[in-house]
Each structure stands twice: as C-alpha cells, then as structure tokens.
Amino acid sequence: MTDEMNRLPGYMRDVPQTGHVYGTLSYNRRSKCWTIKGEPCVTEMAKRLFPGSERKRGEARFTANRRIIGEVNWLMMRYPLEIAARDRALWEKSLEAAREHALRREAALRLPLRSNPPEGTFEGTLREFQKEGLSFLLANERTLLADEMGLGKTVQALACLAATGDMPALLVVPPHLMRNWESEARRFLRINGREPRICVIRGLKPYSLPDADLYIIHYLLLRGWKKALPEMGFRAVIFDEVQELRHAGTEKYSAASLLAERCERVIGLSGTPIYNRGAEIWNVINILDFHCLGDWESFTREWCDGYGNHIVRDPALLGAHLRREGLILRRTKQEVLTELPPKRKLVQEIDSDDKIYRELMRPVMEMLGSLKALHPDAKERALLEERISTGERQATGVAKAPFVAAFVRALLDSDEKVLLFAHHHAVMDVYKKELAAYKPAFITGRESTVQKDASVARFMGGQTNLCVISLRSAAGLNLQRASCVVFGELDWSPAVHSQAEDRAHRMGQQDSILCYYLVAPQGSDRDMQDALGLKVSQFVQLMGDKAPDMENIQDAQRAAKRHIERMLERYDSK
Image (tube, rainbow, N blue to C red):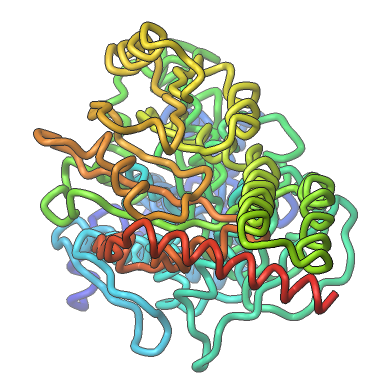
C-alpha cells in the first residue's frame, strides 16, 4: 500500500473484492446520480444512513459529489456491490477525485498554509490572513469565503483566479458592484503580462458574447441567461454577496444552480451569508456543492427542529461541520486586528444614472457657455465658477445617490455601523428616501441643536446603525460607535475628509475603521480624487492606509479652479 493510501481515511480505501455481493452500483446519466439496486438489507441500510437516498423499493440513489462518493465507498465495505461494467472507469475516476479531496482536506486541517499567486499573475501584496484565505480557496474548489466586511474577499477571490488560471470565469455580482469588480480585476489580475479581457453582460435576452477572460453579470439577469450560461464553458464562477441566493424556488436560484453544476470551481463570497433563519445556509451551500448537506428534507429533519423547519437546532455544531468539511472560512476583524491598521481607505467605483446626470448638467453647460462668451470681470467670473462647480458636484452626487444607497444598504445588512457623508441637501434627500427602512439619523445643518443632539444620541445609543452627515457639519462630533465611514460625495479639501473620518476614529476606538470613498465614472469625482491624492482600488490604501498629505485651503481652491478650466476645455472640444 502506498504512502498516499496510508494517509487516506479508512472509509476511502479499496473495497475488498471477496465475499457475498449484495447488489449492483450503476450511474444514471440523466439524473447524474449513483444508484444501488440490491437486496433489502443493503437498500434499507442505505436509506436509514442516508435519508436523501430514498427512492422506490429495492433502490437507493446518491448524488454524484465527492463527499457522497466516499460515503458510498464506506457502505460498500460492509455490503460489497458489483459495479456495472460500463460505469467502472467512471467510478474509479470519481473515487480518485474523492480521495484527492479528502487528502487536501486533511492537509488543510493540519497546517494553516499561506499561499501567494504565481509571479506575474497578480498585482498587489496579500496580508498573512489573506494568504491563508487563498490557500483555503485553492484547497477547496467549492466553498464559501465568509470573512467580515472589509477584509478583502474580492482580492482573495481574484488572487485565487490568478493562482489557478481558471478562465474563462464568470463573476455574478449585485448591480451596484459591477463596475467595482471590473476595476478591481483590471487592477489586480495579469494574464500573460496584460490586463484581463473583460465582458460585461447586459440585458435579459442572451446574445453572442465576445471572447474574454472574465465575464460579469448581475443577479437580476440570471433568469434570462438561465439556459445560455451553463453552455458557455466557464471553468469558474464567483457569486459575490451570495446571500442573494439564500431563498430557493426562484428562477434566479435555479439559474445559479445549473451554472454552478457545470463549473469546476465555485466560490461564494459574503460577510452575511444568512440573515434570519439558520436553514438559509442550506440554500447557499447547496449552490456551491449540490446536496453536500443532504437534501432539504433530511437536512431540516436532522439539523433543524423538524421536517421543513428553518431553525437550526445547534448552529455552532453546524458551523463546526462546515469548517471541517472545507465548506466555509470566516475571519472577523477582531481575529486579524493585529494585521490591520487603525484606519483603512478604499476608493471604490460605483455606477451613476446617466440620464439624471445629463438632465442636471444642462443649466451647468449653459453657464459654461456664458463663462466662455461673456468674459465677465474677476468678481463675476469667480461667482459664476462657483455656481458651475456646485452645479456639477450636485449633478454628480444626485446621479450616483441611488447606487451609494445600495452600497450602504449592503453594509447595514452586514450589521455595520455607518456614517454616510454628503454635501448637498438634494443628495441627502435621496438617501432619506432610499434608506428609510433603516430609520437613519441626520445631521445636515438643517437641524436645530436639540435635533442634532437627538440624532447623535440615537446613533450612539443603538436606535439606528446609520447616521447621514453633511461634510461641513462634522466638526466636534463624537460618533466612535461607527465601524464604517462612507463618502457619498467628495470635497476638494483633504482636511474635510480627514475630519469626517475622525468622527469615528476617536481616542479609545478598539476596531479598525474602514473608510469608503465612492466615486462615479463621470462628473466631478475624477478630478476631486486626484486633488485628494486618492487612487482607485489602491491595495496599499485598502490594507496599508497611506494617507495623502493634507493640503491647505488655498491648494483645494486651486484644484477646484483647475477643474473649471478642464471643463472649459472639454466644452470647447464639443
């Protein structure tokens, strides 16, 4: 017996070929399962041990995944079966895959291995806990990375693609994160020295797609592409915010299941894979590795309070089982806090509404024409430039406001405590409407002192996890309960942002604060980014917090003036 065979668990070793044969084992290609037909003693035992195998009298079926193959092998040690001649090669191949999986699981449990992608395939430096995350993803082809928000799940998943080269790959993401995934992939991945070719899938009706390394689609489109995607030969699929699939029985869920079945590597990402009911985890895990927790009926009967019940009886026991089986990895900020700086910055691209932006920019363009044609004196010119700058900033903020709200909604659903900063009242009014269900507190400059104090008390007292604040109204506030700071709008002055960040990052703060700068691809955001010294998707800023040098008020004013000059240049070119 080889050393490798010696390392295998006993139930995975070769079945003795002597003694009485109790029945047959064959593969049903239509239902993609292994079927035992034989004496009542073996089929009855199979049904008692594996409730999901129940079918008709004298027959038991097993889903063809790596874990169940091992269990069937174990059953055959007690009740030897004759394997159909046409299926023997397939059984040997399936058993070898199950053994390889078992050996990888044993190795992963023994050592906290740390991996890096091959040189030249990935731009960036992983922290130690992220190297462990990459090793976990490499050891488990179908799994859930459930790290807490802000620990770099996106980067770890991209590092896995870089390490394996499993492309073409499909990224299934929420609508408001499509642009960010595209920019992150371009930032981090390298394929033969070049950026990856990326295709963003749009519309419900399937059409011919160009050759690409990565394809990106959002969940709302899955139902339209249900039949097309499984036939496209994806080697890997990544489901970001996989809690979108926590409810079975929908077209979206069915499409995701068919897609995952045809891929070699399936990764789910979510800091909150379930919301209310523990049994939702069955729906999520079942997408990643079909029936690895048995069927729904047997899962709820054994793990929950009874058939069809959604309350898991012992969540800690289920969690330990999922971790042992390599089905989930979760780290919290507290667990890796020694590797994190006190304050981390992430500049993230989000979408904006082009139609709203163009409509709001009409009067701004008219003012630009006046500025060009009338040649006003210095005082009038300064006033007009201020109105142009304000108008464009507001157009930018309003156009992206629904997407900012969607991003903040995801943070709040992950139980983060969020400070959301903006500048214009029109933008904050959109937030008020879009995020009303979270009962946000507001400090916008329109409140009285009593109302402002009440908003602070509501947030600090835990009556709400969201406080919307004006960028210029943050001075003197102590809101250190916050775990995330989100800038829905930008200011020209870095000092304004630094002061806003410090509302959460106060003396005595024990957590690592994550500061998101949400930027749109059009409008004033690009130039304001440059003025603030922020780079999109800079990994060193996400994990290293190299803060920009603080500029003074005159520098900020000069940056705003340069932006107006560039707007005039673009106006002339059109």
